[in-house]
Length: 341
Image (cartoon, rainbow, N blue to C red; front, side, top):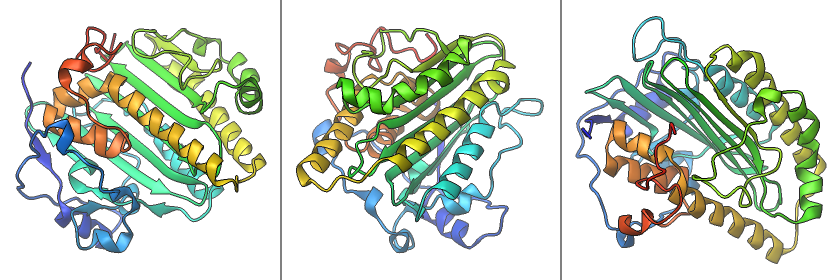
């Protein structure tokens, strides 16, 4: 398969962003592309803990200035292509900024913030924040014209809360192939935990029968990091997105915020450490199995995809030998690694 060239966005662009007006035009210049590195050489420098001040001196991107350019109103693929999941990103950001406290940018590698393919029409942009209640809220939108539209987001609670993670993965391929996954991804399968955090979703899911589908087990084990109230749909009708998926998304998000507001911060250091460890386990599990990694590689190159996966999406994951990856059910590069399957 052809590897597509891409345009890196550097610190010069993010510095300009911080000073620009609402147009938020991103400026880029040539930079050596990222090189493949053996798993042992990739280490986490906790760039997600960097401050906004750090972003002025390093190749780090800020999200708030770029957020001002949302929603995208035109596709990189040309006129007449609808940005199917842009309303979800905009609504999520509104909830984050109106319902959560102390929303701050989490600066991250500018090379991972925005990439534009220059052989096929393709664009991927990401945003990352931290709040008083969440250690990390990340979002990514991929626009490949009619070929693909993807919105992905994960909310990681501050480990002083034992809340599930909010997981969003909405994909469309071509005109009539939609795959939608929405869940509060539990840190535990304990009955009391599930009753507290997952059962409240049941009456919401029951309102949307189109979201009662069964996720393929070739990608993930439903007994790990997924709930019985996972909303899953395959559809060939794009009108389903705003008629059913969008109202369900808003209700799931409202329920999640209510669960947060009803919970109490943990003070026991051991339990806090346990919550964080489960989030780390989630990152490792997901990095090894997420079929979208294959999509990143196809449009933006395997080296960039590897870095994006382990240094932005799942920063607590450790790369594994590609030969071993093939033995992991549903892992990128395995027989089940097609994201549109």
